[in-house]
Length: 453
Ligand SMILES: [Zn+2]
Image 1 (tube, rainbow, N blue to C red):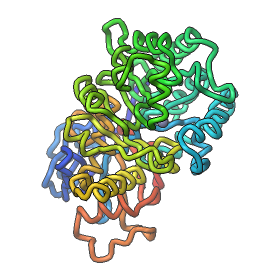
Image 2: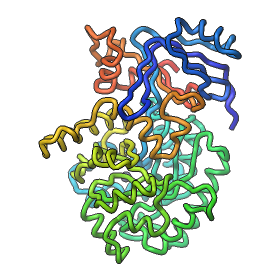
Image 3: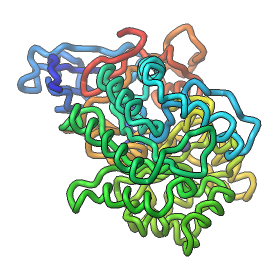
Image 4: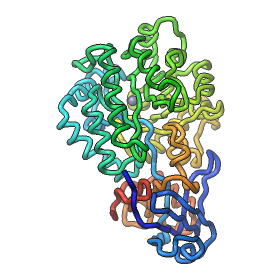
C-alpha cells in the first residue's frame, strides 16, 4: 500500500512521553509530517504554523493546522491486548471466574466465527469504533478460524488501523466445539493467516502477523513446539507471539499438568522459543521471581489489563515491581473480560489497581504516577508490541499516529479555572474525557477517524 498525502504542519500544544518520568508538554510547537506520514520535525518555541513552513525546507506549501487554545496533539493510543471476536460480549459475564466466563461466554461466541459473514459484520464495525476512540494500534486476538482472522486483517487495512493479528490456537481444554482438529491442523491454519497478512501488507505499513497459543492449558507440547519453530522463523526476522501468562492460579495449575516438569510458566514458553523481544504476554499477575528474570532476559513484554483483572478477580499485576526490574509493560483492554475497549479506561483502571496495591501494602510506591500512565498507554505499549521505533511518541522519523484532543467542548470535561494549565488539561482529558474530545485520528499521517473527519 502506498501512502500519498500532502505534507502537513500542526501547530499548538503538543504532548507526548519521552520516558516513564518525562511527560513532555510543549505549549507552542510545530510538528511537520511528510507525504509518507513520517514526522520530519518537532520544533519547539516557534510562533506559528506559517513560520514553521518557512523555516523547514520542503514544507513551504504544507497543509497547516493551528490547534485551538484548549486543544492538544497526543500520540495515538496503543492497546496491546484485545480479543476481537469477544467485542459483542462487552459488559456481559462478569459474574464468574476466568474459567466460568471462558466456558459460558467466550467459547460459544468465538466458535460462532466459523461464519465468516459474521466476522465481516463484527470486525467492520469494531475497527471503525476502535479508531473513533483513539486506538491507532491494537494487538488483536482472533479465533481458531484463519478465514475470520484474515477478514480482521482486511478490515484493519480498509479502515487504516495499525494492528498485530494472529489466528488463535486451541486443541484441548476448551468447550462448545471451540477447538481445532489437531496440532497439525492448528499449525497449518496459523501459517495460512501469517502468509495472508504478509501478502496483503508485505512492508508492515499497517498489519503484522502473530502466533497465538491461547495459553498453556490449550496448546499441548506438540503444538507449542510447532509455534516455537514458526516464531523463530529459521533465524530470520522473528514472528510476533501473543499469549496469556499467569492470569490465575487455576490456569497455572492446568498449564503445569499439560506441560509436565515446569514450575514456572515462563520456563515453559521459553523452552519452546516463544519468549523474545516480540512476545506479548497478557496479564502476568502471579509471577515468580524466575518468571520476572525470564521476562527481563528475553525482553518479552507484559500487557497489563487492569479492567479485566478486576472484573474476573484474577489479581493485581505488580506493575511497579516489573518496571523496577526492567520488564517492558504496556496497557491493554482485554475485551471482553474487561468491559471497555477505551484506552483511557485502561489508564484509569491501571491507576486504581496500583492504588489498591498501595492500600493493601501500606506502601505508596506502588501508585503509578500520571506520567507513567501516559507512558504505559503509548510508549510502553509500543515497546510491548515491538513497534517502539515506529510509534508511541512524536520523535522525528516515527510514523505520525496521533489524536487531536479538544478539552473546550460542552461535554463531560469541566476545565473551569484551569484553562492556562497545560498538564491540568491533559489530566482532565485522561480521567474525564470520552470520544467526543477526540476530534481527529491519524495513522501514518492519514486522517482515519474522529468527530471532525
Ligand atoms: Zn486475553
